[in-house]
Image (cartoon, rainbow, N blue to C red; front, side, top):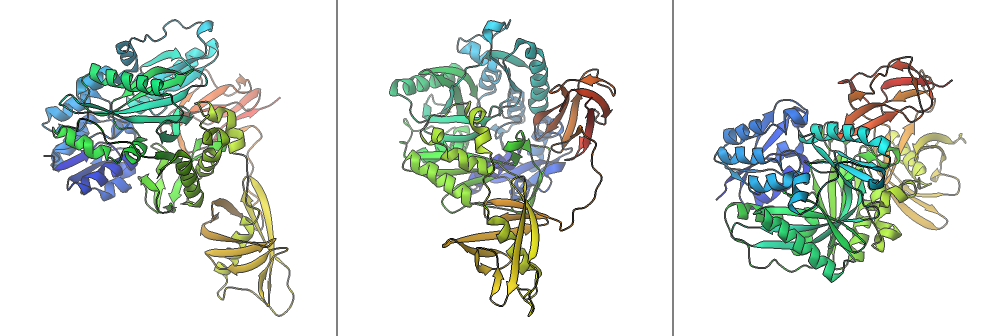
Length: 614
């Protein structure tokens, strides 16, 4: 039997595997980069081994170092998690060659399905080779890996070469493999997948369907099980194709077969030979622990003849440190507090006080709700996220709540173009007008030794300014004999952490937390502004500032100071949190300054270039 498991991964998935191992009495070993030295997964493991460096290519993609770490720590098994080397057949072989148990499918199965081009050939589907106008739109896709990296939609033939170059660079950085291919892009389809589980005794389970249609940049945001609204014949076809794919490669362990469903037909996409990020919704519906089953299968145990019955519905939302209203730009900083109401499963790789850095994926956590019906599960998750304490970097929390309550989602009319159509509405500001007042009153109490500042003579109102939802808000209140007052609002209670206000006969409670100039009032985040603006130097018009911390990976070929550029022309590319972000010219003009060079590390607001309009 397995006694010690090393997880060849980081963050949320490492913590999740460790949780099952602890419950099973199995010792745990973490590996960590220098950037992750104090990360939660390195802290909670029984032992941890350093992988020198910060970049994925030097750490979590170094199979040789990970195998050495497993041997040195006395592990007898390796679980790959997802991403990084989880679908690398050579790594799986290296693990078994070292005498360790590989908690995953055979290397030959990984090899057969790891390349999406070979997987499609196995299923009788040929990728596009010579793309013409009649083939458009097409999707450029990394042959290895997943998670939306190395993917580009091309709608104009003139954009194909640039998309291929960008996808290759992103895929090579994320997966160590720059191979890409081109396939037709199906508009208006749903992303549906089937969870499979197979043992070494010939049994293959299909554990229902999942719908993962709500995606940004081809990376999933909200997932659910089972996929709603599928006909019985279509569901059986999905199960049949999934079992056929698994049996075709002699699959063992947990895997997922992915499809694009359109016009009542299932189009095979790929088989992921690993655990999926969204596996918790399947666990909730079937009442199983997929990681525990992976371990049992790796130990040689047989599955029951039939899987357990499905019960109810589950929905998962991925909480990202990113700004959806600003091109999904990743965010960094201290995560001061993360908490959700009871009854919600929260899988995370962070604890209160941890820092969200620039080197890896910006996902903070996954929140999962399970209920007897879809409507109840969706409502439960939306309400929990709305009430959650998420204090720290900007996140997509508001977007998740609005998405779950959007009519197209609640009525199961979603597809992969959901955010293309609805992002503007879903990110339009809807601030609570009383939030700035609650912040000001809490601040007044916190700064006063006696919780008030009343004087016996009339005084001018106190004035505070906050930035909220991109706008400036000014708050005025007074200290009186009876306490704090504000025009038209009754202050029922105010202290540094809790403010209760009554307006138009309605009483509302606000939990307040302040960290520096950032103030969290319930689900609203504000920035406290100085009383007198700081007269700092302004950047020249046309300045391009780094929207996020990251690394300059490329500068457009031939770009030098004095070059004439066109509005929207790509000038340079930043890599942050495993994604490439294109910086374009804001207007047609002359490039008067170019500060960015490949390999340069930049912080938010760093000057990259200046384009001077005529």
